[in-house]
Structure formats: structure tokens, C-alpha cells
Image 1 (cartoon, rainbow, N blue to C red):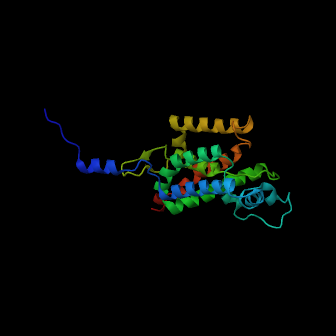
Image 2: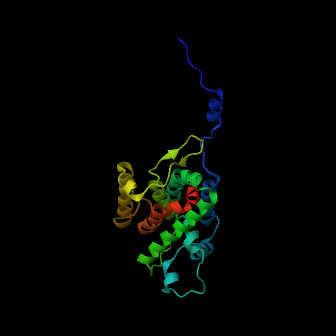
Image 3: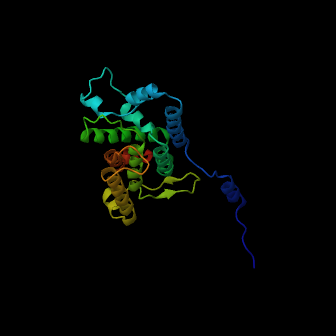
Length: 237
């Protein structure tokens, strides 16, 4: 009885494939978020950390005129997404970023992925502002942008092509009605939505001192879900 030996080239390719095959742009975002947290938590003193929050976080009251200030953090609606308040907050977001950001970045490309991050971060901050325009509580964290990535993933039906060694969302951007007919996709999104609302409305996440800004998550998700096609390289063709 004979057996066909596996292709040596395919074997070598699998052997050389890295364990953590993350796109460079995702690694860069993770490095920025981790670096910002380490600096803010272990390097800056209280006064310097206060300055960072004033200029880097998103504080709705600054933009509604509730707090008279001599400056407006122009980049706050984006830079807040690079700041995190605790190790748990950072760790959870980076895990989700690696999981959903990697196939999306490989699909969109680095430049479009950065634009996607910026737009979904602004959308998340925008909905948070619309609901809490006079809030003085700083909004920080990458959850809004990552929620946008989840919305984008849903439009691909969570289909990922790994044949090229770089996992990327596969196929065309699906019509919304087709997505809503996919039971697994709808079930995942429903569970994710319920978790967001429950943790934000009912109480705090164990070990966390701040409230989950679930409204911001919804803002990022909506933009990612409805407008991912505009960022897709295949859209141009």
C-alpha cells in the first residue's frame, strides 16, 4: 500500500509561518496602546497624567461649553482610543483587536485600516457626546474602534480566508438583509450587544473602577457595519 508524501514546499511554508501572524499596522496599534499605558501608569506623575487626560481623552463637557476652557482637544475624539485605564481594560481590548483587527487590516490594507480606526473612533465619541453632552467623565479606550471592526466582520459573515498565510475577511461585503438571515452571525451580534448593555447599565465590570461606555461601542459598531464597503479596496474596482 502506497501513500503520497505531502508537498515539501507546502510543509516548509507551514513550518515557517509565524505563530502570531499579525499585520504590521495591528502590531503598531497594540504597541502604541501598550506604550501609552505603561508611560501613563509608571512614568508620569499625577500632574502629568492629569495633563494627558485633559488633552488626550474625550471629555464631552469641553465641546458643549459646560466647562469653559482655553483650549479644545482637537485630537481628543481620536487619541482617547489609544489610552486605557487599567491592565484588564488594555488586555481585553488588545485581544479583541488582534482577533478582529488582523483579518480586517489584511483585507483593507494599512492606510485604509488607519482611516477606519479614526472614523469609527470619532463615531463612537460622537454618539457618546450626543447622549452625554455635559459629562465631565473622560472617555478612553479602543473599544469604539474595535466595535467598528466587529460590525465590519459581520458584513463579511465572519468569513476568513487563510490560504495565503495571512488571514483576511473573504468574499464581497454582504448585503445587510443577507447578513440578518445568517443565524450564527446574528446570534453572535445579539450576545455581544446584550453583554455591552448589561455591563454598562446594570453595573461595573469586576475589578474596574469606571463604567463601560456601551453607547460609544454602538456608535463605532454602526459605522463599521453600514460603511465598511467604503473602506474596502475592492470597492474601488
